[in-house]
Amino acid sequence: MDKLKERVDGKLPANRQKIQTPIGHALRMETDFSVRTPKGTLNGKAGDYVIKHQNGMVSIIKSYVFNKRYDILR
Image (cartoon, rainbow, N blue to C red; front, side, top):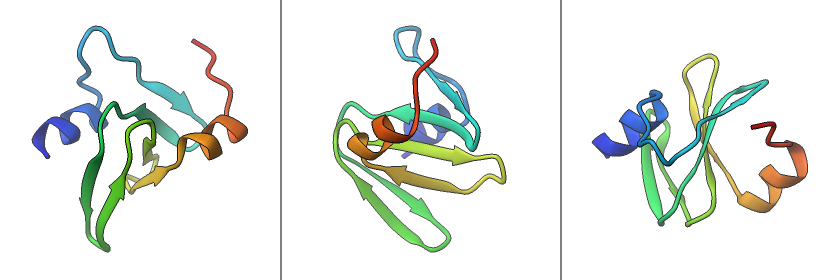
């Protein structure tokens, strides 16, 4: 959990890329994962994106939905 928090907060390993979106930051996860939020635990699969919204909330977007909605510019 701490590693995910660090990654969502912007501290990424050198080989990973944080994506700036109009809603905040996105990170594509390499393995299945869980994120604890005030509203409960969110579960994601490898390839899904963790989104940290500008207001600080965290959500998960399935990779196929993310790829339809956003273009990666870098």
